[in-house]
Each structure stands twice: as C-alpha cells, then as structure tokens.
Length: 206
Image (tube, rainbow, N blue to C red; front, top):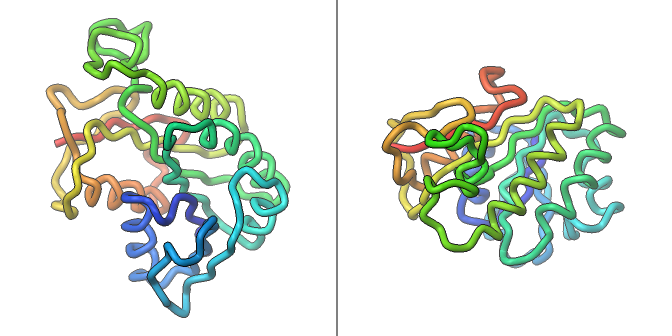
C-alpha cells in the first residue's frame, strides 16, 4: 500500500511512519525541513514542501492509496487552511481514504449531546483555539465524499503503545482521561485496514 503521512515529524506522526515502514508499505512524507526526518529506509520517500502549497500537496498525493494526517495546530491556522487543499488533491488523484488525528474536544459532549465537548462543561481546557481548528477540518471532511475517520485522543502524554485502550464512536469513552502517543499512533495506523469507523470520529482513551 502507498501511504502519504502528513505531520510525519510530530509526536504521533513519527510513530505512524515507523509502523508503516515496519509493515513494508511504501511511505511518502511531506516535510518542510528535511533534517527533521531522521529515518533512512528503502520504502520511504521524502518530499520537501508545505501543506499550504497546492502544488506541493498535489505532488505528494501522486500514486497514493491512503492519506494519514497527524498535523497539529501549532498555534496557527495551518490545519484548517490545508484541509481543503488536501481534499481537492485527493479528489483529483482518486484517493478516497483519509485518517486524521483530531482532538477529544470535537467529540459530542455526554452532558449536552447537542454540543461538542469543547463547547460544554465536559472540557476542562481554558483555550478552545485548537479544538476550533480541528472542528473546521471535521466540517470540511463531513461535506466531502471521502471515506474519512478522525481519531480523537484526549490528554496525550508521551508513552509507547500498550495495545489496551477503549474506543467509542463520536464520544470519549466514559471516564477516559488520557491516552499515550504510542497507542494513539497504533490505533490511527490500524485504521488503514479497517472500515469500522468510516465517516466517523472516534474517541480513544484508557
């Protein structure tokens, strides 16, 4: 399988790259800074570019079967601005499957199901900026014809994959308060083999 991984130098993205290479998939990464990719592998293709550049995104999408985006907000609007460019490029290349890493803030609230978690008392975070960025991506994907899945981790400490966690469609598993970077990456990666959560958000927590 040919996999494009965006956000490959980030905490979750770097783990996803390792999973895909270990399984001997052909992996393409689009990175702004080549030096941030420390891996050398015959199955890895590295493209230097920017997710906000339409031509760079189009180049990265060529020959790809599935897209995994682990882009984060980084206090900017890169996430929401890149989403329409990704969707357009995927349509042109005939790519249907995209898995993205979001945030638990864009899951439905259990205490007020008409609201997203970040809009309700369920969220303890004072700043809603990151969740608002992820919501814009969610809105874009909902309107698209793509087979999308948004993996929505709660508090995300560093840690390797333990392989035991709970997932639930559209809401955070009850009482869930954290999930490691390793387990988030492992579950996200496994979605390339699964149709269980097509056109859905997935809450993940211990």
